[in-house]
Image (cartoon, rainbow, N blue to C red; front, side):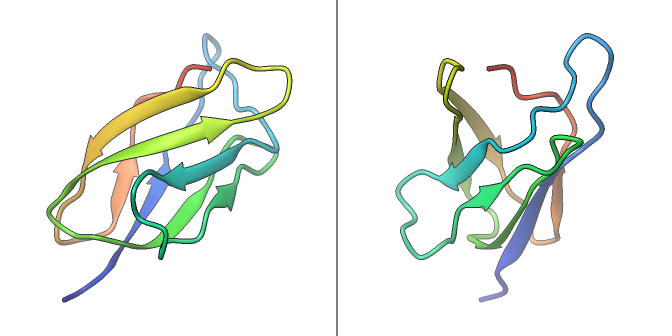
Length: 84
């Protein structure tokens, strides 16, 4: 099985990037969580391909968020902002 990477696309004016948010794949404890960088980008490695997964996003001072995505058999970019 080929494991995939998931990354966040570009933030925009309406939804600027949030630095230091913890992003995890729910129910996949073997996938290490990521932390967003100064632009709000993150990279998760070893995510199951061709699967529906839920990203959990947390940061102190923000309401936690869930983002359902569907992975493919290639690396994936989440193009829509994840709102917290």
